[in-house]
Image (cartoon, rainbow, N blue to C red; front, side, top):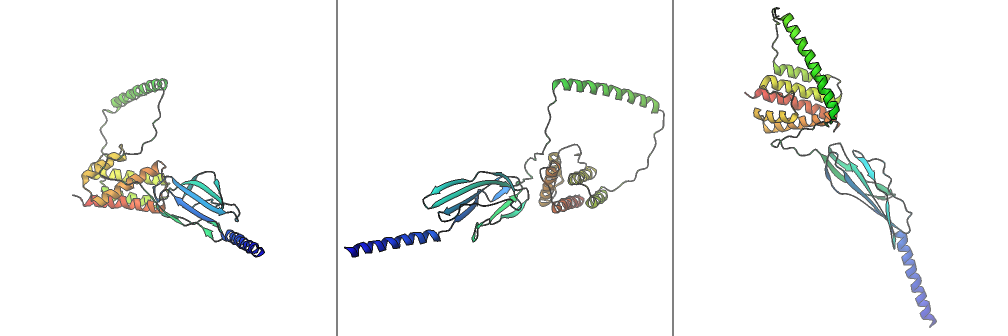
Length: 295
C-alpha cells in the first residue's frame, strides 16, 4: 500500500516538473500583417501588430517611431486579452506613403531573438488611360454672397466705362499718326522651345514654378507649330487636342503622365524628386522632337 502511494507521488512530481519545464521553455511569438500590399499614392494601409506572450514572459510591446518611406497617420490603443497560458496584445496602426516605388516595411524587433517578418509594399500612381476623358484638377470655387456680387458688378461697370472713355480719347488723339513699322525677327518655334527648356533646366526655380514654366513652354510651342490654342484652357483640353497630332502611342502616354504629374505638383498634391524633374523635362523635349518629325 505504501509502495502504491510512493509511486503516485513520484508520478505527480514528474508531471509537475514537466509542466514547469514546458512553461519555462515557452517563448513569445509575434505577427505583423498589412491589409494590402499595393496602394495608390496617399492611400491608407492598416498595419496590424500582434504578440502572444506566455505567462512566464514579462508583458511589453513593440516600440515603433518611424517607418522608412511611410507616414503614420493613426495609432489605435493596444488591445489585450488574457488566455489560460498567457496574454495576447494587439494594435492597429494606419500608415500611408507619398513616395512611389517598391518599398519594404522592415522587420520589427520585439525582444532578443524575436522579430517580425518584413513586408513588401508597392506604391503606385493610379492607372491612366489616354483614350478616356481626362479630368483636370480644379481649384476650390468660392461662393460670393449676393450683396458682394451686386457691388462687384457696380465697380466692374464703372471700371468698364472709364476704360471706354480712355480708349475713345486715345483713338481720337492717335488716329492721325502713321503706324510705326517694327522689324521682327522670325524665331523657329522648335529652337526657341529647346533653348527655353535648357535655360529652365539650369535655373534655380522652385518646384511649382519649374513645372508651370515647363508646361507653358510646351503650350506655346504647339500653338506656334500646330496652331493648337491651349494657353487659356485646362490640361484636359490640351490632351484632347494633342490626339489630332497622331503621336506614337508610347510617346503620347509619357506626355500625358508628365502633364498629369505637373498638375499634381502645381496643386501641392505631390512633392517630386530630382529624378521626376529630369524625366518630366526630358519627356517634354522628346515630345517636341517627335512632333517636329510629323509632317
